Amino acid sequence: MLTWQQLRDAKPAEYEDAAEGWSAVSNRADAARIRTEQEMAGPLRATQKGEAQTSAERDLTRLGRNYQYIHSECGLVRTTLSALASELSAAQKKLKQALDDAAGLKFTVNEDGSVDYPRSTGLPVASGASTGSGVAEPGAPVPYLPGAGEANGDPNRGKAEDIAERISQAVTSAVEIDSRYAKILRRLKAPDGLAVTDDMLLDEARDMGDVQKAVGAYLDKGSIPHGKSPADNKEWWDGLTQEQREGYATLYPAEIGALDGLPSVIRDSANRIVLDETRAQVEHDLAALGPEPPKTILDAGGRTCSNPEWNVWNAKGGTRFRDQLKGMAAIESRFDQTGVNGLPPAYLLGFDLKGNGHVILANGNPDTADNTAVYVPGTKSKLAGAGGDIARMTRMWKEAHSMSVGQTTSTITWIGYDAPQSIAPEAMEKHWAYEGAPRLNRFLDGLQTVQGGAGASHTTVVGHSYGSTTVGAASKAPGHFAADDIVVAGSPGMLVGDASDLDVGKSHVWSEAAGNDAVPLGGKIAHLGGYKWGVQTWNGVPYDAGPIQTVPSDEAFGAHRMHVDTGGHSGYWNEGSESLKNQAAVVVGRYDYVQEDN
Image (cartoon, rainbow, N blue to C red; front, side):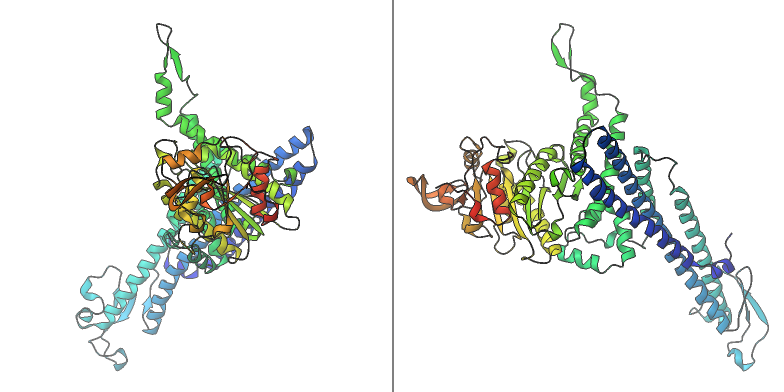
């Protein structure tokens, strides 16, 4: 049992020193992970081929994963020790204040925490009115405490009882603190071996939850900004000590990784923790269902019918788990492409499984980029299909990079909103766009905040299909859209009738539409365009006048109509195409490179 003497003599600073040591290990592991991926694995992929390269890359991937695990686990140990030191110091401070008060009154604190005091008739002790001595113990009835009749006329008794009670409370608090943190620290350990297994990652997630409960108010989750502006988020982050930043990033990675306005390196590191733990959990949940049964079977008559076993497997989440893993694999595949054909490191700026799943992934660090492109995909976009959208922005980066020698470019896949998942009826409804618009604006504001202002990077927002409708909803309000140019491809409408209604200005709105892309017409049927008084023309020939509905590919809309050499609704990012090159030219501000249709 802890005594008040042990609490008095405890050295919380030793725990703080230990926390600093674990902090150093955590930070070095994160830095080593970055070096492994960017300075070792990247150049290896760019310069080597064959079996040796494959083996070395596999080892480096495992090493990077190990460093990621060390960063997170050591960060949890650091935060636990720091919180222990803080709480123990508070209990010790309370004890020492009680001991100081006893010494000032010339009371004696006994080994068991009771307090000897000189009895008094109510006169000051110094008057010589003492009539013997008494012993005060914790748990005194309320009338004996100060302020309630002064212990029936004996003020010394009341003061002594108060001191004994405070000593007892400090020791009791310290015992609870010691027990709580000892239990957590015993759990923060890893098995021997070189491989980080899914079981270890699941254990890490449990550790994180346990530490969150244990640290109490030391790092309060409630103090993390929620629903605030990126500028407010940045102000909060900048106001933290380095120790607090490190603690929040490893203890609440999902919340920190989602905060617009924080540096991309911080968000990436936090979101990778979330990705690793989430993938392990989903793989565990899928494995628990057993192998996927056949979707159909033959009935007694030899006819194909639905398999009841598959229906049960699917109802328990089988298809959802499998699709989630597909999306997470696409993210990790992009990580593994760093260095291939000069591709820069990837930064995971957002990730969660809410709804259909969200992912925000950047090629190159947007915080320091001269040019930034944010791609907003449309109908059916979700985590499961992120691979195709990520590949589009990978090709965009390569094309833009080749056009901007001496400049840096970052291209971002932004699946940060809930997109409609069906052409009808969902993609015919406007609420998806209006609900996604504030999220897009916060993300763009966050980029601009971290970059250092409106002029720090040339920013282009690229909207495809229904994504362009979301871009339109976000850019309708003058002065609130943190971008320089808007590019849309296969747009069903932007909810406005003229390019001048968008915040970037008419001369900075660019449109692509393939001749056989039916989506612009479908958008008019769904009334996703906007209305204006004017004349509709086709190749300069008028065919409608009055209140007309327009979409960006219409001449009457007033956007730059860029030349398209691809077909269909999804070919705008075909490698080597003029469609892609025209978009890239806008992204890097080389408007003179853009080929426009008359």
